[in-house]
Image (cartoon, rainbow, N blue to C red; front, side, top):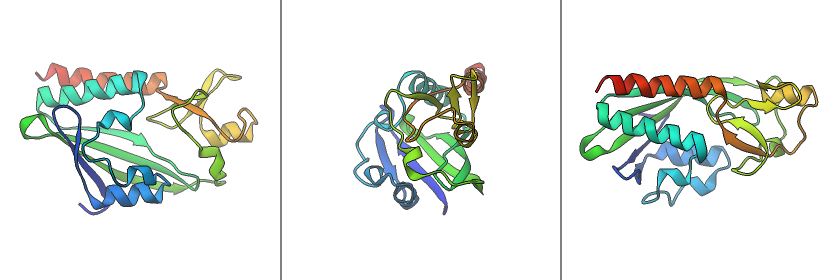
Length: 184
């Protein structure tokens, strides 16, 4: 499974294992705090709260109940790259879930972002979708790419964000959960 970040969580959503690619991906993306010491900790310590956490919890529970795998596309960009990724969630014995995250497409940004633009965290700030990586530009009332908002001078640097989900991604994730529940 080279090139895939793989981890397992138990029935209580505690991380029980991670592969070497997990550590490498965390280090490559300046997330050294995620590279080690995650075993035995709740997955929810590392995922957004609020609606994002609620929907992913529902998704995990639906996979466990339906005993069916699910695939969800998402973005995980950095300063130089736009990355389209796929999250594959498989039910395993004893209500464990095995989760694979792999890069489907990587493309360089037209203009790399300054590192401080991506100083993100779960803080108060501009809404950013945890799934598609777009930000909400209040001036336009629309979700847009960070680079477009910077070019139009709609956001300031460094960018402080609060993670959530845009309406489109909320609807897509909700439909995925509903499809799984219908298979019960």
